[in-house]
Image: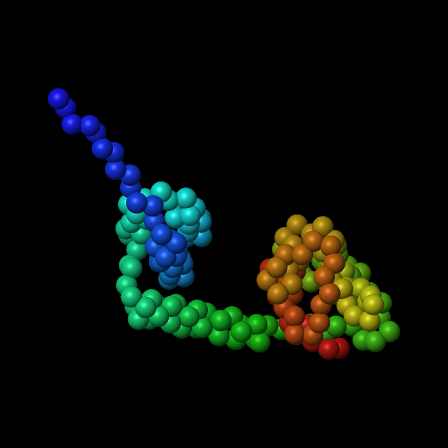
Length: 181
């Protein structure tokens, strides 16, 4: 007579175990050890894991230190990012100023073509690059389908975006900081 087979099922991970694994993944992404895509893929595995072994496999190449180690890693990451933010702020303050038009003006064309209100002599600037229009008590910057784009505070614009003194604008490769005229 043979013994009956007894199947054992893997113990499903508890919510606390899943939370701990997600914390390790967040710390790994925050410290630069995981790319955003890798983080998202592993997070999906953690949320659908049916065994503790799956959780362990997801965290195998990441440090799983205690709260003090995680605090130190987060602090070092923030300090590293602080230097980058200071450098960016310093660079923005050193940009040449571009005065917004005086009161009473309704628009300003920006481009490389003669006759532009603001003529920029740079090959990265389109002939008809952008236009500033006075609308609703403020200035709105429009990209006119330029090849190399118009950017406000680091974001490429499509259509119109309200701008104010202190904003960083870029036409092609030329950057300016807006100021009152």
